Structures are given as C-alpha cells and as structure tokens.
Image (cartoon, rainbow, N blue to C red):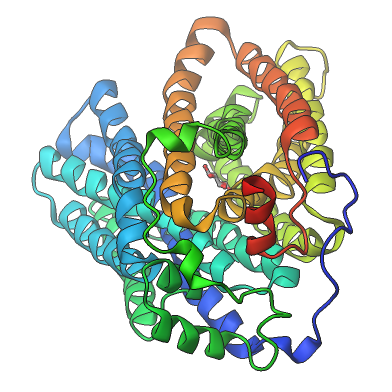
Length: 458
Ligand code: BGC
C-alpha cells in the first residue's frame, strides 16, 4: 500500500444497510465535540488578551505565557495519555478530557490572579491534548470503511467551527471583564461531550483489545445492523490480547515506517504555518496595509469562514477521491499561495492588500482540503490496534510541539526579518510536504482498519 496510487484499491462496497447509520453518525457527532473544544480552546485567547493585559497589567512576556500555556498543556496531555488510552479505552479518555477541560475553563474564568489564569489555561491544554487525537480515533474505530474519511473529518469540521465560535464569542464579549465569559462558556460544549459519551459504548476495537469481548460484540451489533463482515469491523480478539509493546518497539520495524509517516505529517501540518495565520491573522492583514483594526478583524472572520466551508467540501471528497489526490493537490496549492504571500510582502504588487487577502484565503482553502483533515484522519487509520492509542499520542505530541514552535517563532521572525521571510520558509516546507506525501503517504480509502494493519504487519 505504501506506494499504492490506485485510489480504488478498497474492498467491494458493502450493502447500504450494512451499518446502523443513525447510531454511527450520532456517535461520530458526539465524539467530534472533542474537536470543538480543540478549536475553541486554542482560538479563544486571542480576543481575551487585550482585556487580560489591562486587568492583570502584564507585558509581552506574560502575554506569551498566557498564549503558550494551552499549547504546552496539549503537549503534556497528548503524550501522557497514550498508554492510558490503550489501557482504559477511548470512551473513558474522552470523558476524562471533557471533565478536565471544564475544570480548567472554570479555573481560568474565575481567576483572580494571573497565576491561576495560566494554571487554568494549562489544564485546558491538557484536555485538548487528549481530545485532539482521541476524538478522531474513536470515530475511526466506529466508522464503516467506505464513509470513514468523511466521518473522521467531522472532527476537523468541529475544530474549524470551534475556532469560528471563539471569534464570535470574543466579539460578543469584547468589554472589560467579558473575558471571563469567553473562557467560562466553553463548559457548555465540554458538558455535551462528557454527557454524550456516558451514553455511548466504547469502540469495538478498543473493547476487544482490552479483552472485553462480550461488550465488544454488543458495540459491534449497535454499529453494524446486518453485515458485520462487510462493514469491515469484525475482529479476531485472540490476536490482540496480551501483546504488550514497549515504547522502543514503536520505533523499530514494522512500526517504524507508519510512525515516521504519522510524525512527518504531524510536523508538516504545522510548519506550513497554518497557525501563524489562525492565531495572527489580524496582524498579518494590518501589515498588508489594512489600516483599521475592524477591517482586519472582519477579514479574519473571513479566514475562519473559508476554513469551515472548505472542510465541509473535504468531508464530501475524501471517500470519493481518496486521501492522496487531495493531499497532493492541497500541499501544491498551499505552497503556491504562500509564495504569493512572500512576494506580496516583498512589495511585488501595488495591490498589496488584495493579493494578501486572496492568497491567505487560498492558503486556508488548500489547507482545509488536505493537511488539515488528512493528518488527523491518516494517523487514526494507519496504526495497528495494539499500539494505536500510544502511536497516535506520539503523532499528536509532535503536532503540538511543531505548533508551539511556529506560534513562538512567527512574531520573532516578523520583527527580526520582516513579513516575507516567514512565508518563504512556510512555502518551502509546503513543497517538502508535497514530496513527503507523494513518496510516503499511503492511500487508505475504502480499506478496513484491519486490512491496513495487515499491510504493515504482513
Ligand atoms: C490543526 C490546528 C489548526 C486547525 C485549523 C487542525 O487540524 O491541527 O493546529 O489550528 O486545523 O483548522
């Protein structure tokens, strides 16, 4: 499969009544609330900063600390929860993440001192780190192969909606003290996730791998109305149980290759500069010549909107066209858009502002149809069951690490070298991402997780 470019290599289509549509869509919808927490939790701080600065009287260093706390928390949450995920299952971890998220949000929202604000944001980050990969994992293990791409990407859709919701809430509560609402309101989606998961079973794969065969069969029966085999979900439990894998084995054959693919996609997803745009869009627009702050903020909402709409398009295309064609077209397109931004900031065009807006929108659109959803999707598909939680947590950790690196270095690069250099760096990373995907990314469309696993393990 490694170099499999024939997109149609999957098994025969199961009959349309092969799975319980209502249950599968409902559980994917609930689990994808983890994505909403991810998007909201990371984006909400931008609108709060101004008011926080005034209230707590802090300078740029503390501003960085408040912003970075959530990313640091996510790093810790992602890596610390991998083994727990394989031991306690996806459902429990999603419930834990909802509770931790709500607690962190309340601490931040009621904070009377800066320290508590940072502690609260760090705790929120830990929860986001867990949910960031457990939500796609839960959906991937519940979804029938032929709709898995779209369903798992519901999570990415929720991330983008969460980002938009944060922008809108920030806008609505933009007055002194309103920041407490900005943070506090995120208890609502956390409650939806936690309570929703209480009523859902864990995934059949996760139950099987923990030896809970009876409950695994019950969960399977809820997913697959008739034809379990056709839905590609049936498993031989004996094979999965009691096979403990050490951390070292994750980086030895046969796991080394899928680990490298996951970590590579994780890092590329970030170092093409997506969050330089998501976190700093208003600043970029102002540098591009939009004098007034409201216009820059308006253009930022436009970025969020394009992200949501094009992610919807990706959901429709992923199971039709396959992962590879979208990944390749997307990385090529986003690299071109970044080059245009690099040139624009060098003063190549008189219409500087217009070119910046068009290029940024194009960049977001190409990201939203490729690296955005496909990284989280692929890492939820390519790992063998017995290491899936841990392997995904390593990929998520790499993603958050690269995210932190970009968020931290972008403002420094802009002030040190001007605006065009960072975009040229991101554009070169985009070109590398294209070749990485071309040579290494597998096509997983239509294949069951079982088939993908057998491919690696022979
Ligand atoms: C990325 C985030 C990014 C978001 C934007 C996600 O897939 O992991 O870092 O902010 O997409 O839509």
